[in-house]
Length: 283
Image 1: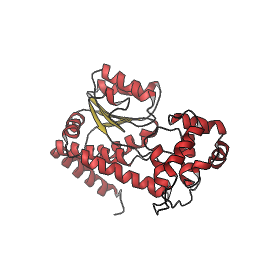
Image 2: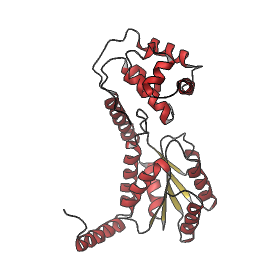
Image 3: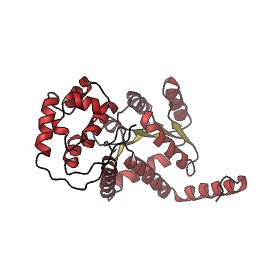
Image 4: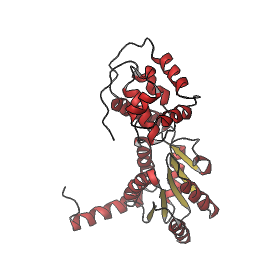
C-alpha cells in the first residue's frame, strides 16, 4: 500500500464525509484515498488525472462515481466543488489520522450501545452453554474468529473455530452438532462472503441458535441471526478497520465469563497452572 502524504486543510472533512459509509472495493478505496489526499484540488481534477493519481484505469474512476450514486465522474466532480468551494484551510490532520479518529467515533457509538446489555447477555448465555462451541469466520472475519476462539478456549471446554472454506466446513459443522453443539457464533464482516451466509442457513436447519457479530443491523447476516451484535467497521482506508468488531468480541467473551463465573474461574486457574508448569511465558 502506498504511503499517503500529510493533508492539512478544511477540504479534507467534506470530501471524506462524501465517502463515509459507502461500500467500496479496494480499487475504489484507492480512488477515494487519492481524492482525500488531494482534497484541496480534487474538485478540479479530470477523471484521467484522478486515475493517474490513484494508479487505476479511467473506467475505474467512472465506476467509482457510479458506485457512490452519481451518473458519472462529472456529476461527482460537481458535488466535490459544491462541498469544497470557499472552504478555508484548517489543521484537521492527514488521511491516516482521520481514519483513526473515525474508529474512536465508532467506539463511542459502541459505548452508548452497550448501555443496554440485554442482547450481549442473551448471546453469552446461548454460547456458554453450547458444547462444543463453533465459531465461524471466513475471509476478512477469519482473524477475528481466531482471536475470539483463542481466548474463549481458556474459559470454555470445547471451542471449534471454523475458518476454512469448502465442503469440509459443513462437515465440521455437522460434527459439532453431533457432539452436542446447539449455538454458533458467526463473525460476518463486509464484503459478506456468500459462503458464510450459506453456512449460517445450514446451521439453522440443524437447529443451531445463531449469534452474529457484524457491522450493521441491516447486514445480510443480521436477518439470519437469533441475536445480532453490531459493531461498525472503518471504511476510510483501502481495507476495513475492525476495531469495533474486535471490541465487541471481547465484550461478548467477558459476558460469557460473567454468565458462568465458576466455570471460567476454574478453567483460568487450570490454564495458569499448566502454563507455569510448562514455562509457556517469560513473564
